[in-house]
Length: 254
Ligand SMILES: NC(=O)c1ccc[n+]([C@@H]2O[C@H](COP(=O)([O-])OP(=O)(O)OC[C@H]3O[C@@H](n4cnc5c(N)ncnc54)[C@H](O)[C@@H]3O)[C@@H](O)[C@H]2O)c1
Image 1 (spheres, rainbow, N blue to C red):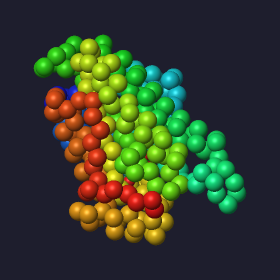
Image 2 (cartoon, rainbow, N blue to C red):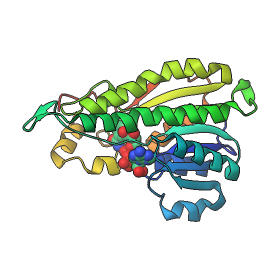
Image 3 (tube, rainbow, N blue to C red):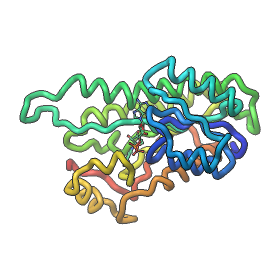
């Protein structure tokens, strides 16, 4: 589907990969509903004014997500897609110096990264399914964000890897379920990207990860993620799959 003129929700759109996607899609002529706990950069509303709508949203809450979709559609028009980026990181060994890993922390990561992703996907799909089909009988598209940790989980990444493995596993069943409504679903599994999330990583881990990236030998730029999300919207044959975006990085144990 063409992005210009469509209303698309971006969860986690106030920072990092989501913010870059919101900006790229706005540049292409879309209207963007930002579903994020945090507010987007003020420059976004200055630059795009009536084509951006943000409402504080916790992706794990049914009420919050229903409300941002309803209000977003009221202001910007029928929802045609979602790019689901909201997520949190967590690192903890299964058994560390203080004993077994925290179950509470594990639950929280699954709650935000996996359940939050499914919550946004299901409610966005419900809204998109109400609208008329466009070319190729397509009604809309959804892009979810996993991580290469879904496949190459490192030491300390059990919760994060489990949450992202769950997101990757959703690509095919969601695409199959939503095919009858003309909605495609794909997952992007990024390698390591320069964002606020990555800023917290220690210099040692950062250097080790960059050393492991064959080419290009650097962190990814958020707009390179946004460019792939754009392609996932525009290429109607792309459906039910997870694409790694990682410069051929295969992470080692640490
Ligand atoms: N940066 C990387 O290297 C990298 C690599 C692989 C995967 N990812 C994934 O990409 C996604 C985006 O990450 P990023 O690097 O842009 O991080 P980021 O920290 O820059 O942005 C994440 C955004 O999600 C929002 N958020 C967090 N919890 C939320 C909640 N419960 N409800 C609503 N909003 C919430 C935050 O407010 C923030 O704006 C995440 O799912 C992350 O796991 C990032």
